[in-house]
Image (cartoon, rainbow, N blue to C red; front, top):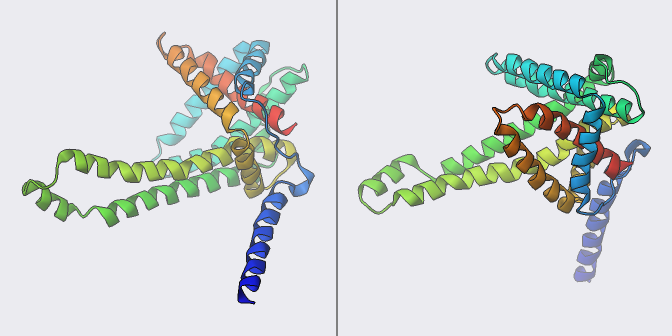
Amino acid sequence: MSDIQDEKNTAADSVDVTSVVQEALSVDGGPEPRSVSAGRGMTWLLDGFALFRQAPAMWVLAIILFIVLNVVISLVPVLGAIANSLISPILLAGFMVACRTLENDGDLTFSDLLSGFRQHAGRLAGVGALYLLGVILSVLVGFVLLAMFFNVEALEQAFDAGTMQPEMIGLGMLLPILVILLLIMPLVMGYWFAPALVILHNMRPMEAMVRSFFACLRNILPFTVYGFVLLGLIILACIPAFLGLLVVGPVAIASVYAGYRDIFL
């Protein structure tokens, strides 16, 4: 009898988890992410380049201003990093609006690029705050693991006694780094489409990040293709005194919009 009751409880728990996921993916009647073929990862970059070609001068100017603003803000210790995390989604949202304007045969203007400051700025900053909080927690977990598994004094004694090899210490230090990367990866997935979903669909920060996460999870293969191709483009762009990044940077940003449009629309 108790076994039957346990099975019922387990089934109820499964239903609850499923309902939570389904609710997260159908919030406010917004678009539900779909799975696309692996080759679409390459298409996102091609579509991003097509958007770049419509207004190359404005794109280059915009990306330069974006970089300069981020660098200037980052010069302020601690507060600069926090401000940068809050402002970046607002700026990225402006790029998403600009891409939509270009897609509708409009002109790329600074008014579009600043749309995030006029629309849903608080929610966009919330996306940045959640991402920053997640990164901080991930790093703290890494430090806790480092403190738990590696006592510095014990390591020194073992090393002096000849029972601990330098390679083992290096391998041990690698564990917290791997854990941090594994924890940050879902954050990146949740952040990827969040600015677009907030600015274009009026979603709340957590809802946008949950939906973005599942969009990336459902499209691991196209994102793998996308990542390798983009990495190759970045390497090539760095060869001529990094000047190629003035093209690859805008294309990468526009490709985020292309991926959002493909998966959500």
